[in-house]
Image (cartoon, rainbow, N blue to C red; front, side, top):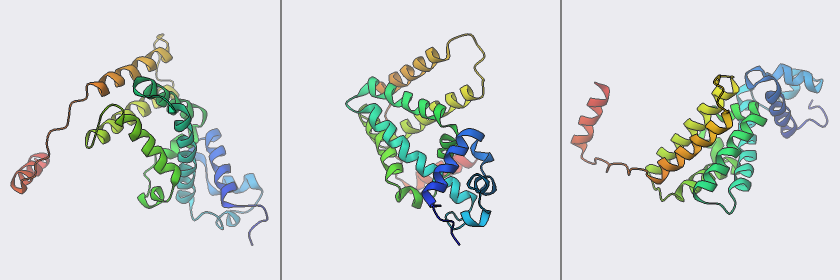
Length: 208
């Protein structure tokens, strides 16, 4: 029997809040059930597994990040938009470390397709970069560069890895400025090789 007042939304939000406190890896169905004062079986009426629970936390975070990004970059373009976007990204990760960790998990494309927040977050990222005049495949390459830079910086900072006396905020601002310069001077990707013969040769080279 489902406990009165217990909903999937409440369970997922409680898991997200707990993740921000104890870390995503420490969130278990048992720990969450204890926080509600129920048995594990009661939660399985709302989530299929711990993997399903974490995926739902990731979708919740995607919804929140989409709102966060949308507010941050509204009316801005170029360097101003990039800096606002970057600060929103880092600020969310600092304020919600458990939720942020969930966004880094591999996601089922079907779940992303059903999540307005996840799709909006992706589109906001691409829209900001289109402001630099980028088109595919450069857009995706640029998205990966930003994500790698932001995540790397945030992860090192969270782990206390920046031991130099240099102010971390100043380094962050310089890093974002460097990204801005890279985006302004982005080299276009070389034309795709369409010859099947050439493609086959390229594959052999990559595996050699």
